[in-house]
Image 1 (cartoon, rainbow, N blue to C red):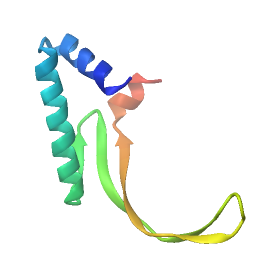
Image 2 (image 1 turned 180 degrees about the horizontal axis):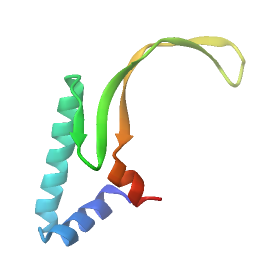
Image 3 (image 1 turned 90 degrees about the vertical axis):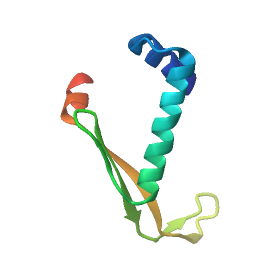
Image 4 (image 1 turned 90 degrees about the horizontal axis):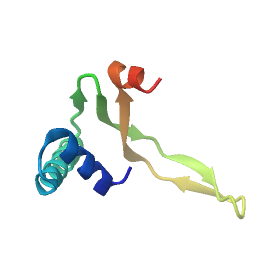
Length: 90
């Protein structure tokens, strides 16, 4: 499902217009991004939790040449599904 299909599904499920559904989805994405950028986590009970973790620097290998290269440390977003979401996909 892409963003346009998600907007259509939100509009159909909620009874909102597609324009209002797009605004709501954009607001959710913007707010979630800003919250995670501050290093805070987001918990949606039953759905899951988003958090930021620090990935350490490591040495990798170029698959074409086999030469080692340094992969720098960076922050990554992690998602842990909630119990209701996990149960619904089984």
